[in-house]
Image 1: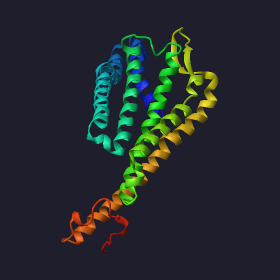
Image 2 (image 1 turned 135 degrees about the vertical axis):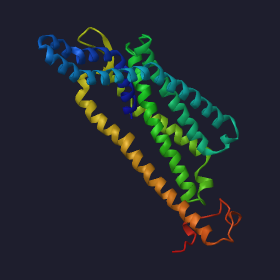
Image 3 (image 1 turned 45 degrees about the vertical axis):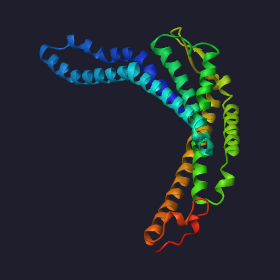
Image 4 (image 1 turned 30 degrees about the vertical axis):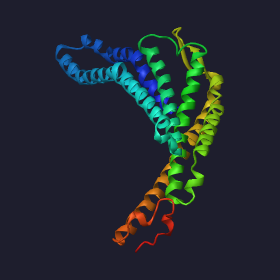
Length: 285
């Protein structure tokens, strides 16, 4: 699922192309000198508002590119690093769900690093992203991390679903060893499924002589098919699974809440977490 990176790269690269676009929008103003004196006021009024809107939009995009994007990147790097340390170096490491969250923080941290390199390439002029070798590596890592993040969320949701829907099976199904095995499987699967980026991505020479890291034109038709498959595997399928499981979790929690509201004398001590089965709790109609 590298659509997030594609969207972010477009917003970053806008900083390089905004000025030419702005100049092209202002080009019709040169025609004012060919109209009469009375018509010139009407022409100025006609173009004044669009130019103000264009300049305001350019200012917002330029400000976001220069300050907001790096601020979000640095904030995310610090937050994900602290999250990974907390999940793996405190008492939380005794929970299987912590390993999914630690892996998720690591994947997001790595993705933000690649995004920072792209921002440095377009703003500071540190030409790393547009170099052979670095281009393929950065695109590959960003694709792997974005896809891995989605499926780690799915894996975490599955564990929560098992804990709520089948609490009697949770102790022997949701173990630390199984969580590590699932994380390892997802990492290997993501690394293998996105290896095509080393062939389809590369440094392409533009008409103006500049070199830009993007998809190679000879693989355009192949990438259309890959993009459809990737959208289904990394967007549609995980989204449907997460919605279905969260809906069932919410339904069971509501049934659990209705059960204790119906029986005021009941307490949580009567139903330990390891012994309760929500599906067998009678619910009044």
